[in-house]
Length: 97
Image 1: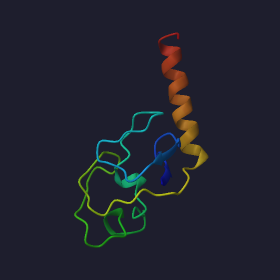
Image 2: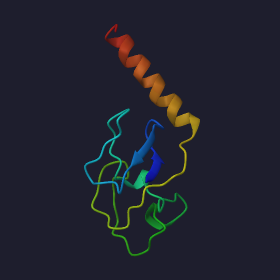
Image 3: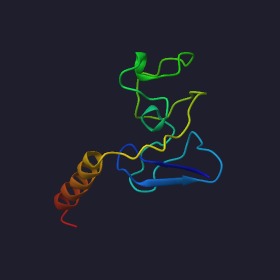
């Protein structure tokens, strides 16, 4: 069982075997198979990735073809969750839902 958290909204994620390239977050619809959800993602590393053999990925929050992707089990900070919740509230207010 693979467990992790969405980089965008912080939703808890569970996958039976592995994360596929086209998997999306059930909470916000963001791509799961992306650099920001990978355990190799590191803001202090070259190209923001600890894996030295990986090809450079320019867009870190979108799905890609990296062969080194492993879902990170690191929980997203509350700040990301608050931003997502605030954005959802603003959107609902805009359409008066």
